[in-house]
Length: 288
Ligand code: 5GP
Image 1 (tube, rainbow, N blue to C red):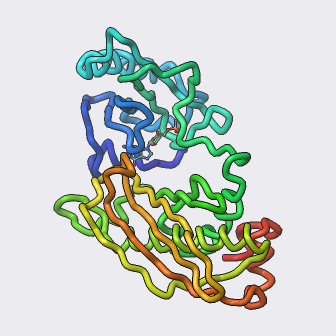
Image 2 (cartoon, rainbow, N blue to C red):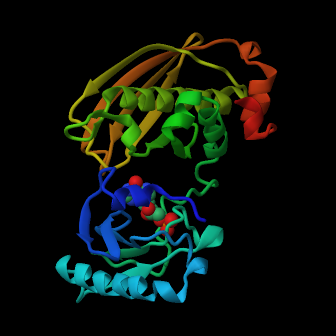
């Protein structure tokens, strides 16, 4: 028996989602991380884990998914220009949620790449992404929040905080707690320091936060991820200076601006196990 996913909770309306259509067979709702101006997920109400698990008895629900896709495309005004319907299966197909779903994507020319993906990291451009990812994964609170490094270089770091019901601070509006954004920004700035020092001195340093000032401009919109872009703009012998912007759709519409300073500590203070973990020489489970 396949395990329920977050989509079952959306169907039962136990967690917030922008539901556009629901009947006895299928549910359609907006994707939390849209890859196009229109990005809707259409799913059967009963759990089918992957396309491999489809049975003849599922044909009615699967057929309904098609008719609902056509109806929603029409309602979204994208039917004439066209759109793309995609179902990913298992690892090579890029399936992340194991409750089959049809992506309805449109509202702009979609190019030839058939896969709705998050940002694809080109490690030639952002060579420190892997080490930055390992650094963030060392921190228990970051693993808990699901922070993921999208890009990292000696000049900048970009980290994503996924939306989740666990971080809602204001149940009436489903807006996430400001403290989580502070943690995101602190992590992005700290990671930018690790990357800048690693590149400049070829050494690993742990830099505790000395001071972090965050100016909030507006609350984060529910259901959407938040990004923090941070840079380490100056390294003195004892302090690393950083600045960061937290945003959702566009960096030009910030949720918060921040400046932070971090204390530089001798590389000898970094424990051997931590160093090995950052260099990718330890499996994840050993450094929990
Ligand atoms: P897959 O990669 O499995 O084909 O696509 C899963 C999709 O589900 C992704 O596009 C992802 O953004 C979306 N998604 C994951 N969790 C949630 C959620 O909690 N709410 C909504 N609305 N979409 C989600």
